[in-house]
Length: 534
RNA sequence: GCGGGUGUAGCUCAGUGGUAGAGCGUCACGUUGCCAACGUGAAUGUCGUGGGUUCAAGCCCCAUCACCCGCUCCA
Image 1: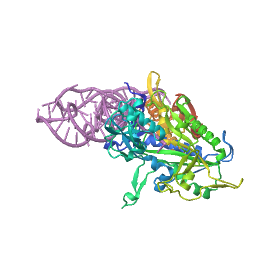
Image 2 (image 1 turned 180 degrees about the horizontal axis):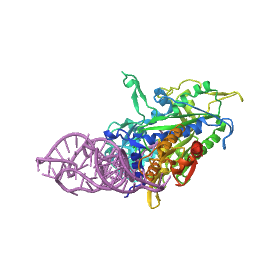
Image 3 (image 1 turned 90 degrees about the horizontal axis):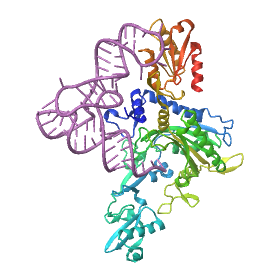
Image 4 (image 1 turned 90 degrees about the vertical axis):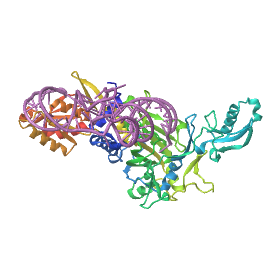
């Protein structure tokens, strides 16, 4: 058998009920996945670990290691569909709503409004030389490309008869005389086509195109839009963070790699609000803290990477971004896939929702203007600044955004946990999930179905079920039951045997070491609790 | 989006135009004394979907969907 680790994991996910393809009985749907009985428990445990560690159990009195000061954390759960203006001010509308042209020679795809060029005539032929760069650089490029196309030497540059300055491709009606940015022949650019990276929907039973709205492509904007509500209602003081777990939707161009790039996915996002002067320190704090979170839950250091973005890679508003990346088995050796991005977003988001969509102008962010000189996308006009009593300062908070993918985390934990080993000459497949994440915390078996063992086992099962998700199994030989639980990632198996009848103890078998110990039934709950939390 | 590959039982796969198969798993009964034990029996298929060729299609042809690999894309 020559299956890759990833193929085997996908097969196990299906076989044991972790992950199924969406709408499978109808042939499946590209980019959508369902979580089965075990998968839903795993994913819930991941989301709950995040919510507990980041929000509920957060110590807002002490100073966390590496943190500049104490801070508060609260939660939020926003609607998936928001006012369309939200996405215009956030920048998603422009970025996600492109017309693109494709070149059938170079197979490259360009944004329609970001291809530039000039009309030129030489040797009796008039063509439009297109380039992907604007301004002076683009102008220079058109000259070089034109010389090459007409097979002219640099000294014959005056044979090129240019018409006007660099113009956008959107002004060209017929693409037949267009020389694509990476093409050698004319007319290779296809019709401009609309790419909707945000999912569109219609509000209202009688809604038409003017009632179009979008399914959110990220949960973050719901937090920014409720920033003032939270400040006014919850008595939080800066610095504080707002956490949210929820679904988001993007029309990924190429959904691939199992659940890694899904069109419907779940995010675990924090927007952390702080004073501008302290924001670089908070950024570092969150970066390191989030990285450590994955390590603590079992991802191996050699497969987990914290990568700072290069300056060129940064969004126009960001003063720093780092990705937490995992070496997924479906990637080439040495490649990593993003689990979470931690971005220093400055005051871009709150100011955009206050003043209108911002663009960078030199070192500053200014409101982007439309052709009429008015803001291209109007903000809410609401004052989103913060007044700090202690210092009597008024400022717009800076934002640090740790944004994690719940489905990607689930996939990473599954990949990390999948393990094939030999036990006494036999192969076994085991998911070495962290006990906190495991779907079942323990399984309860009567060693054999006689001598009253099932009765005791069932009582143990019912008692433990009040505290943990546990599983009862009395079918077949006990060895088979152990192996079944190995594949489900169950960390502990409790077996009621002959000795139990005498001294009220059971064996507890460790999934990873296979070591068995005897524990009194009365102490089981405490023992399991200690091991699951540790 | 382009090129290549794949699609048959829950899983992994065999099946080169003529009766739909195997291993594993699942279920039942019996057995059971700690790591995929054994015996007996059972269930399970629109052969991804739609169309075509043919006396006859899982197999050939066309289309389509999904998955995998490589490019491309990834705010």
